[in-house]
Image 1: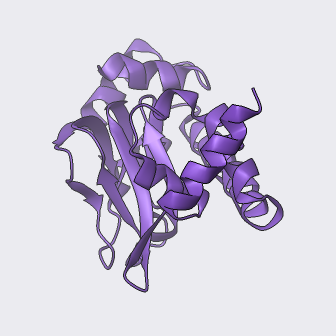
Image 2: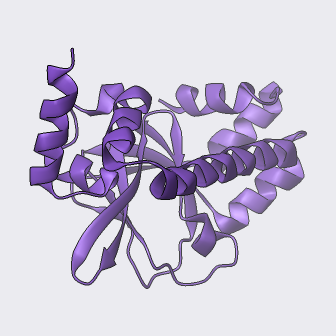
Amino acid sequence: MINSLLNSIQRVITLSPAEIDIVTSLFKEKIYKKGDFFLEEGRVCKQVGFVAKGLMRFYINQDGEEKIYDFSQENEFVCNYESFLPQLPSSKNIQALEDSIVFVISHADLQLFYANIEGGERFGRVAIESVFVKMLQDISALYAETPELRYERFLKNHADLQQRISQYHIASFVGVKPQSLSRIRKRIFTQF
């Protein structure tokens, strides 16, 4: 399973055999059962993870209501960078929606990755740039798109997830109540 992590890194930079050994020594395999937390609100995010198998949700609690703002699935990184980078307490939660296998690297070991892997800092920059662009797109969608358009974008960008995520969680991600999502789904599917 570590091969999926190595392949992800090597899509951006080339790793020598010695560097592959370094990467495999820095990332540790961790198992999360469904419902386990990768990160809980109020705690400092101390690791970046790579999801080899499974699915995670990112959410905030607002007035006692969970609001999902992202998902990480296979071959994606999982982290709350606004907590991880400055090492400050998180205002967000990251929780396994399925039993998951995640390769994690600590803040200190990530610094070793940057120092000992030629192109390691480039990989980190490219990864953070993609997080930044996705975040800007999500913010724009939240303000500029109707819930119906956000649901259509979810279907387009996460078509493979709709069978893995409950309608309740999809509704939260889209920013509507489950009943409203049912109406949106009905309108969309009657158009076809």
